[in-house]
Length: 441
Image 1 (cartoon, rainbow, N blue to C red):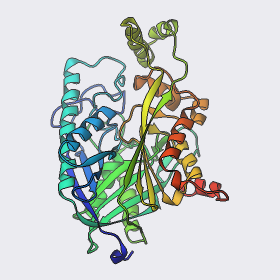
Image 2 (image 1 turned 90 degrees about the vertical axis):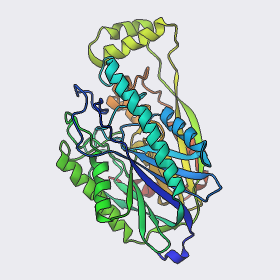
Image 3 (image 1 turned 120 degrees about the horizontal axis):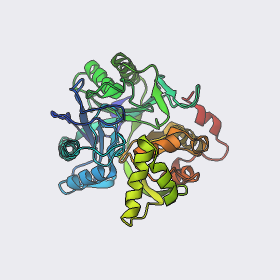
Image 4 (image 1 turned 60 degrees about the horizontal axis):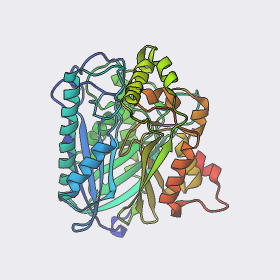
């Protein structure tokens, strides 16, 4: 790519350490019995600001955490917007979904199937507040560090993700890469994502660690001194790393991501000549029929998460509360002219959404992130709702949702995306099957 032919766009980047120095419960796995036992790898938040001074900028943050909730995303945006020109539709926070990060208030509240102690809750609330301060700081640092840059992107492949529901089932092995270089060609930053759970390290390993995403960042930055690597997750709700259950596998997978990202830097990346324009859609995802009181009472007698979840909902009914019939959920798009549509979907979105959207839209100009702006629960497809299982139902109990989603959920989300990026739809006569299968197994 000849940089003299690429539009200069101001870009700023920054990073900040978000590792707690006190005991706290880790999120992601229910089997852990106590607070974290140390630090295996430090955790980070990173920010990229795109746009000119004096106009509403685009801000992308990546965070080493299992899931950043909407209330944190909204609060951080309000803090930043009070000090700088930033538009909500161009503000996004992507979680790496590492299962070795601190719990946050409002995410997986039923994880341990019991009420947390006052000390445990205090540590989680403390860290949640501190994280918001750190995210504000790193966002403002990226905004203040903007200087001319050249943006480009491409797509590679990494193959360690495996469908965890069905042997040989669908996965997304694509690895899109956004590259930021100085006008002189010096590499400043990359942003990439891979559609795989950050669950490589063993569940009972009770130390802070970034999993394969943290290892990918470390490996890439070691290979490219002075450059920053931002890592996000695609539609990975039903994908696990293979092999897994060990630090050595996390390093191996991270190194494979870093190696592919490095390889892409030497290819003919596509220039991005437009700053991203943001669009946001909010939808209400319908739950299936809610249990009646007798059903809750029957469930409440069961052990573990089933009984705990039921008793919490009985308490709500006793207080005169009405259980929600829908769940608010967001979808966002950043449109880089006619060159790229970058989607940000909330929740633990399963791979069927990638397959369907790549069938509807021009895959060569589409990038899909999940775990973005909010992680309220799993987002199953119609197929997975029909099949049942953890992603369809059991996971809802840990996230404290009242029921599984209704079958039309997938159509509601896809319709929202169609409203966000209609200009990227495939036209009549396009080979939709080829577009859907490219880069997938």
